[in-house]
Length: 91
View (cartoon, rainbow, N blue to C red):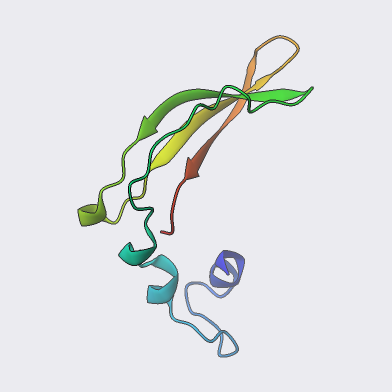
């Protein structure tokens, strides 16, 4: 959906049966109730591992969902090769 939006310069084509508001609006009913962060030490393969840098709590008032923030590191030497944020819920 995002690539369609980018390609169409912000205007959704007629064949897309939704609105931009449907895409970007957070449905607070879909936020995880009683969410708890879990241990992430086992997120690894032979090539990479995810090193937890921080977590951030959700804030329904600001339409923000909880998130994990990871560094992506090589397993062989621990060198950081990227990063990713994993958001819990729909936003």
